[in-house]
Amino acid sequence: MPAIGSCSSAPANPLLGSWKFTTTNNKFGAKGCSQAYVFRDKTATITYADNETMRGAVKTMDVTYVPSPTVVFVMTNAAGHVNYNIVDANHMYLEDAWGRCNYERTN
Image (cartoon, rainbow, N blue to C red):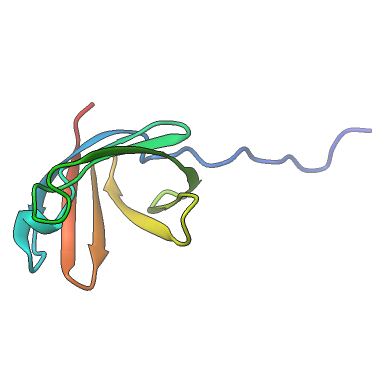
């Protein structure tokens, strides 16, 4: 008997790829924003801001994605998640109580 409906596959992940910091209205300026991200299927690499706390550190971690066309939730083994807001295919941002950090796709 043929199936009445079909299951759709998971939505494409618009976050995958490389991103660089562009602008901010963050109260700490550029030092309050990570400088770059590389998102792969199961990992994220973050180049942190060169500030007193992070000192430009680069960290790769295992992640799980919950993608949609306008926001991607990224979860690590730590509690919580980060929302990456998708503007279009080449622009995204993060926003918190200190302001917005904007990013542009590099690949």
